[in-house]
Amino acid sequence: MVTNLSVLKIYENRQLYEKQERFRAYAVQVAQVIAKDYASLDADIKGNVIFTIEEIGNDIMYREGGQPTRILVLDKNGIVDFDSYNDLSEHGFLRRNLRNEYPIIDDLLQGKNIDPTPLFIGNGLTKQKWVLYSYAPIAYENQEIIGAVILSTSLSDVGEILEAMRSMLFRSSLIIIIVVIIVSFGISAYITRPIKSLTDVIRKMSQGHLGQRVKVRGGGEFRELGQAFNIMSEKLENLDRARNEFVSNASHELKTPLSAIKVLAESLIHMGGDVPDIYIEFLNDINKEIDRLNAIITDLLSLAKMDDQAVLDQKQPVNLSELVDKTVNSLRVLAKMKEITLETIIEPGIITIGEASKLQQAISNIVDNAIKYTPEGGRVMVDVYVGDDEAVVKVSDTGIGIPAEDIPHIFDRFFRVDKARSRDTGGTGLGLSITHKIILMHDGNIRVDSKEGRGTTFFVHLPLGNIED
Image (cartoon, rainbow, N blue to C red):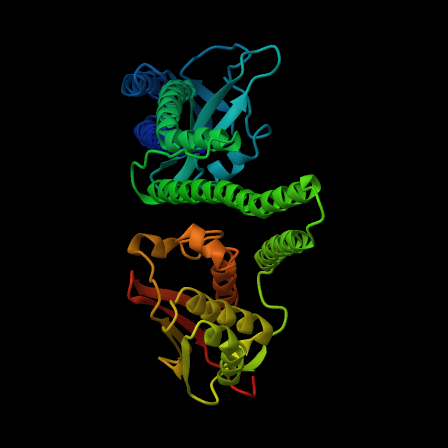
């Protein structure tokens, strides 16, 4: 709309300007041609003016494509002497004094140049129209002003051209708008197709169907969005699978000691006679199963608390060297019972930042596992040293090792390499999961190197700190 209005306005101004300049020239031409005859005192010669202006009027009409032009000749007093229409109708000016009606005539008779003027004429009873008036003074010999020429012509031709152009612009704009709308809908449908597909998949996921994927196509942001969604969907699916496995494993782990307790209790109930030794043995077994059940619940509560805890409650400098030495010493009795050699090489004064109690729990779980899964007469080595701008705790053993396919899962909850043997050792299957979580909370990482039958080595990497921290 703005473009159309601008084009129409520019075109209208151009058409009007060109017509004003042409009729300015016509007015000057008429004034020059009739000047000699109009200045004559001979009535017959002066009468030739009417024929001259009629001829010039016809010529102008021809040049303007049939648009009639009215030519008025005024004497030096502003009275109309000649009128090319030569009528006395209400629009006729013959013998009327225009000087009193139009103040502009005074300027014209004084020899001043008056620009062509478009005027809106008519009233409620007559047909209204725009008329262009052009003016030129009549000068003769000594440049004395002896009269003036006024040309008037309708601007309907300009209006018709503008109306035709307005109609053409409207039609072309309408066609363009329709085409743009159709093309926009087509492009919009094409662009939003991946989003619609993604929305449909998200709706299915919200209904519980987590194994959904979108077809990644195209490029740019849509491709990245599709790839990111597929990664997120895979992670959600894995998380849901892990949750189901965790619930299954937790139920199984909790059910095992409960089943044992139930069997032992029922045996005691149905056992006849007075057999104190068997009662004591069964009660001891029940107590062990209760301890095992309590250990599992305690570890589950610890993991749940750490899952909710995004960061450590308190961070302070921890002397890692002293903490590891103290932890290893507390486990020497267990190693001695299995006739396992427990050795340490600890660099003194290594400082990290974190919570001492949690770090001690993590190191204790790793060393305890190494002792449990190392056969009698084996060896466990604990090293503490400074690596590449980090503190490293290395725990290696000569135990049974871990199969290569099981290494990626050893930090999963309730995962056991050898389930039967693990239960015999009294483990809950949660120790390494807790250890892994604690190390991550300390901005560290833990990795494992192991070969089946040749032992296992755990590497714990922690950020270095200093006492001022």
